[in-house]
Image (tube, protein in one colour):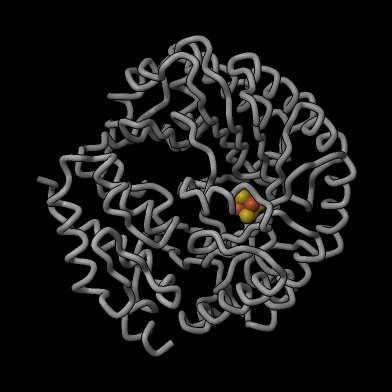
Length: 441
Ligand code: SF4
């Protein structure tokens, strides 16, 4: 702890690097400029992933920084899905035929707000536009406080096989402080229904660093979650940024734990999960030893993405819906964020991409090194130069800079930089240092 404190971990404000560059660096109108060309450049017969954003929730939890808005009227949600279907048609019309769907992720917001017939027509349209690839995986975020049984059966009948259940912390006092009610019993009931209906994979998400949370409450929640036998777990840090996520103003900052106490909570959860046989994945995920994420990590195929970590090597991720982000090899495109503007654009037959980022060669090189650090806690020089043969001087500069700043935390060989296990929590800070490098030679 003393070493981590001295390294500045508890004062650092650095990105989570679910993308490089992070979304707050996207440039206005740059996505609009490139979206059409990048869609057209997807090679026929490639595999893609699709993300569909449903920005509505019945109640807005105070801690949540997702792009969501309150709505409990089915006609509002249904009209929004009509627009998503139009966008799907516009996007797929610009791509070559033969493209297959490797992954579908429906998130939000609360996708389980959709009535079953509305969800059915959405999924039917998606699979008509992009037939499922071999090994297809369909994921959906499930709000256990309001999901209906007919929706569960409809989802599984259409091939959605992974559920993501957010828990945060089951302690009622913590939940009161974050404006969310979700009991263990109710969550367990829904998880059992999902399993009985034939769900293949269950992911669960916890947060640490919440108001009035303690090592005891996170330990109890972690044990309770283990009783539901998830395949994967994300244990992520709550970041209090009421200037950016306005609803966090509702949270009484006086009850927030100190950064060091929050870190201890993350280690308590880690200890319980690892003792139970889960394998750590990257900075904040865990998976059963037979999970494909573990195989991807061991085979150096793990990838960082907006949902955390993935074993999926799709050519591109296409985002549909207000604020959704698409990732292409050439860069990023983010749709208009305001639902009204997004809707207006799609109704007018105009692609909704707005903000974005066209990757330079330097960005590609930095992004690759950041992904190696976030996924493997090492940078492999040979692998870097195989991908970017002209970046030798740049990679060597990166090695020198990292070793100068973080020497006690690294094992350095001629061919690699390896972060020592005790320094894994510093990985994001090391990535931030990489960002400060100049343009590659
Ligand atoms: S945590 Fe889920 S239900 Fe709560 S506001 Fe965020 S997306 Fe909506």
